[in-house]
Image (tube, rainbow, N blue to C red):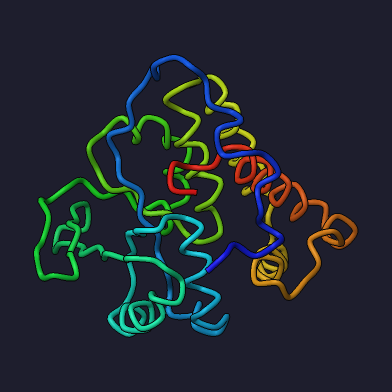
Length: 215
């Protein structure tokens, strides 16, 4: 399914690539926590949003949500795989839909503990799984794309993200969710909430300017 108009990139996919080898390598794998509450936004919408994160998204969710995502994956043109957390909550593996289970990896759950976000660039250097929440997934994915080429710029964006996140209220988060799912006009966010607008502006800037390889 094509990307909603409000998320179409303003630049060609290769516009911001540089013709030189990356300075850093990303060893971490990103995944997304999808809580049961996302069902209220409509599963077609949820899987469409996941497709913007990755065409083969790695997802942490309940069994109920797993079934709903798999049921709607074809229309969103995604091939999801899922994360299994071990008894030791600091470890997790990828549980593939064919029944195979990947190796045990260190697991950092930023979705549950947002304080970990300040160490995001350091975590990218580890062979591990990093779990993001749906609110922050586009910003942090984009920062992970910038990081190999320009660590200083990635760190600048990370600072902007942590500052914007810190100021968000519950009503801001609801407003941003409504924007994401097309229930509120993004052009009116600034007059509704300056703090939500600060977060949204960063998300749009990074998402539109730094697409990933499968965008």
